[in-house]
Length: 270
Image 1: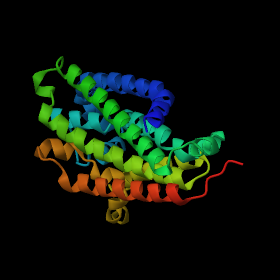
Image 2 (image 1 turned 135 degrees about the horizontal axis):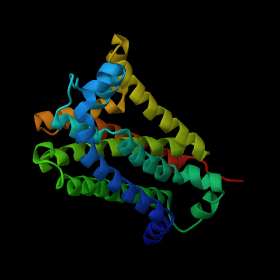
Image 3 (image 1 turned 30 degrees about the horizontal axis):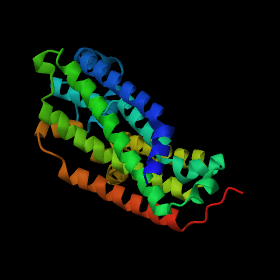
C-alpha cells in the first residue's frame, strides 16, 4: 500500500499543488472583490434581466433587486471559478484508474504487481480524499485571510464559512464517486471525463430552467446543485443535514459500485 501511495504522490503532486495555489488565490480575490462588484448589481439587473435568474440558480434564493453582504459571500462559494477548479481536479484524479492506465497502456503492468485490485482502489481513494481535503483547506485559508482585510459588515462569520465548506465537501465526494464509477466502466479516459462533465453541465442547466419551467422544477432533485445552497445555509445558520446526507448517499453508492466493477471487470490493454 505504501508503494501505491508513493506512486500516486509522484504522479499528482504538482497538479494538486497548482490547484491548491489556484483556489487559494481565487478565493482570496473573490472574497475581497465580490462585495464591491455586487454592490451595484441592481444596474446589471436593469440592463441585463437574464443575469438575475442565473444568480438565483447559483444562490438557490431570489436576491431581489440588491444583493446583501451575506448573499455576496454566498455567491463567492458558488462562483463558477471555484467549482471549475474543484471539479477539474476531480476529473483529472478520479479518471486515472483504470481508464487513464488503460489509455496509457500501463494497466497490465500495474495489475501484475503483487497488490490486489482492492488495495489499488483503496489507495486511489485515499489520495482522492487527502488531495481534496488539502485543496478545500487552501481555498478556505485564502478566504479567511482575505476576510481579515474587508469591512466587518461584509465579513462572513467563521462558523458560517465552515458550514458551507462542509456542504461543498459533500458535493466533492458525490462528484468524485460518479467520476470513479465512470472511470471503472470505461476504457477511455476522455469518455469518462466527458460524461461526468456533461452531468455537471446538465445540473447547472436544470437549476437554471427550474427558475422558468415547472417540469424542470419537478425534476430538479436530479441536479447535484439542488443540494448545495450556501445562501440558505448562511441565512439560516444551520448545517444542511438533509442535503449533505443525500450527497453522501450518492457518493457511497457510486463509490461502492465503482469498486465492485473495478474488482470484477476484465482489464487488458493489448
